[in-house]
Image 1: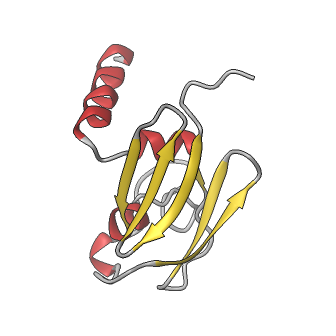
Image 2: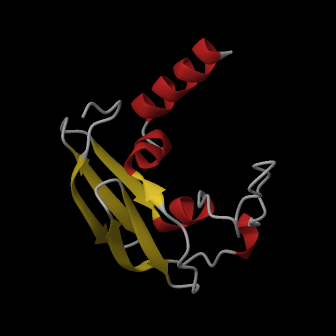
Length: 115
């Protein structure tokens, strides 16, 4: 099976962050708050319009993942300290959300090519 993105080789919680090390050697360093605001579940994003339903201002500044469960071989499901447990973050989504400058530049280039 071919994938567009590398696969995670390690996912761990560290302080206020979730760190993902990818099979291509890249490392994504997500703040818990950033990742929580990017939840794509039906409680956080309208299923039809994709309009955000979650107000980022309602997320506690000290939010953290109490647990991170694997979902098959394609995603993780954090249990957040605010009680939210329904978000599933596919590995593809995680890589697209990587906040580093290189990944953000790649994402902007992909969007420009698609339009």
